[in-house]
Amino acid sequence: MTDIGQLNKPQNKLEPVEGTIESISEPRTVNLKTGGQAQVADAILKDDTGQIKLTLWDAQIKMVKSGSKIRVENGYITSFRGENSLNVGKYGKLNIIEF
Image (cartoon, rainbow, N blue to C red; front, top):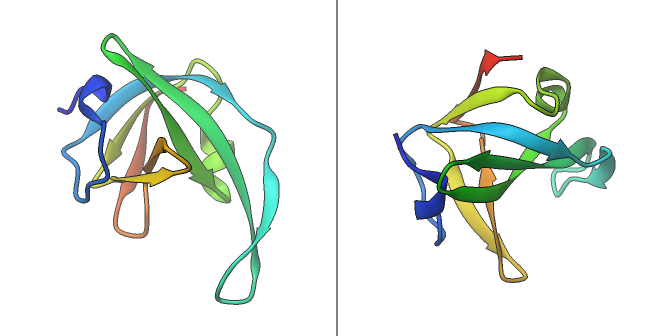
């Protein structure tokens, strides 16, 4: 298991990360490079060591709510405008431990 406090630089293929969703932004529609559109929302994922922004796409948004305990497997960290963000990605998995 990786503590959220350790997620401080861009990296791929993370060990599983567990935490509790503290808040979720309203979904917004974005245009994809491939042509279509998608819904995206930002959540704050927190554990005893810190917090990080978690980017949720389409169906993932409805899978969680504020207070949900989740595990992200094989996720990755990106940095945009100086802020790190945890992403589930194409090869990752979002598991709900407690809804």
